[in-house]
Length: 288
Image (cartoon, one colour):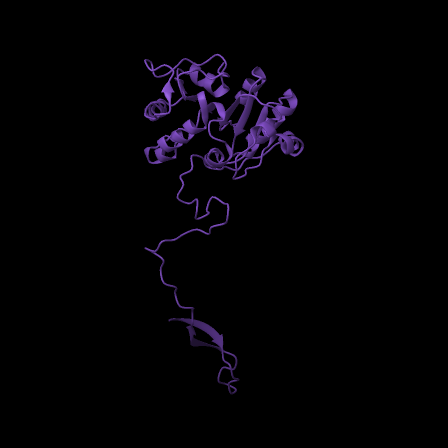
């Protein structure tokens, strides 16, 4: 224990002439609670909540995204409230009845990470005979695309606000997709973050099982090292075939919209790499 000298008044009255009320010095013991043992070297684990990102059952999984706070505008909030019940599908750990979700039978294309939904809405409007499923984790992007769905009357779009991995594992039936779009995923530039890149061997193998025979996977990136990794991983997947094995990459298809960020990069001389792989040699019926 440490002791502190504090100036205090005498507790009892002093005789006259002896400095009644004068201050005196007392040594007061400062009793403090015992120090807890250090946790250094121990395995510290954060609180885990069921169904959350810190759920012990999901802690080992490496995420390809980081949820960031974003503000939704009034129009996005209104679209989420009014159009969400129809066009926003809740995550369920069981196979999704796609015919019931769209109210018809048609080729289905799934997009992972549609951002604010500009390109997704353009492609869906240009291909009314194909149904599109968009997956995005960020609420402002979901609200923005719902707003476009209402403004453009797009009935062939459904959205899922959830991590794409469990959606593909549990909701999307095998061999049910005519196409997959992964346009400009986060490149995770730093080497220590490469494990967070979406296009990894295990994930590509999962994608291959969800594509119908002849279905296609279209990836695009503006980061050359990531393009090279994409090409390497996709070429190593037995269930995928490069549509241009000689060149490896393909020119941007005319039906893939040019994003404003892509256009800005091209003006600065930056490159963009498109890759199109097929689940088998015959072309998909909905490939533009």
